[in-house]
Amino acid sequence: MRLSPAQQQWIRDAVAASFGPSARVRLFGSRVDDSARGGDVDLLVELDSPVQHPVRLAAELAGRISRRMHGRKVDVLIAAEGLSEQPIHAVARREGILL
Amino acid sequence: MTPNAATRQRLAFMSRIVDKEVRLLLDTRRRLFTPDMNAQRLQALESDPVLADRIEAFVSRFWRLQDTVGDKLLPLTLAALGEKVGPFADNLDRAERLGWIASSDAWFAMRALRNQMVHEYVEDPQLLWQAIVAGSQFTDDLVRAALALIDEGRRRGWLDANPPGPAV
Image (cartoon, rainbow over all chains, first blue to last red; front, side, top):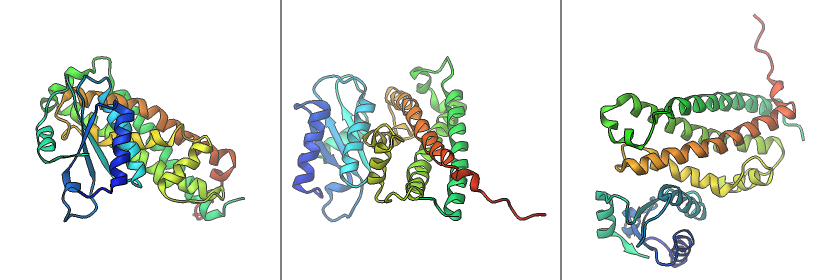
């Protein structure tokens, strides 16, 4: 995984601040691959309860993380009760590393 | 500090572009958010190419104005004021301090929203709808920031400095 322990910690903190302490976050996509370089940061946030305004919350979280990573592109995908499950969610769960 | 003629000319040019992009974005938003527009209509997007084109136009103009303001007009205006021009996030912080934008964090969120508005990627119509509605709300902030920057140059008389073209 190509995120430093410090980056992982503040991503966990940012997720908890946006979605509460029970939210889980997984890193998936090219950052999981140790042999790649650079690349976007793809995150899956898993929630146990339904969420209001998931798109706006995801954008705010992605914006905060992007800012800490000097403007690097960050995509946040949300899995929660009430949101439809898309193929990308399965990929993220299969490949993703829990932070 | 008074910027030199070349900087004033660039600023005047960029302000005209931003002014045009603001009008186009607002016009596109008005045509997208008609009274009958709702999440249900997004379910049939593949069989409604006119609506798909309208969304595309709105998203791309929202996108373009963010880039023109954030990457071009903002650094130019900071430079004209004699402020330090630095990395993007630092420029946004200065813009916030100078009252041109409401929040630099919100600007980053607005940038992150862009990918969630691309209808080819977002397979859930409800999420696409939420993204477009959020984009519409952010449009107000974006337009305010764009006009605040243009106004800064105008108040200082920098935009009138466009020298006339060669006599014919």
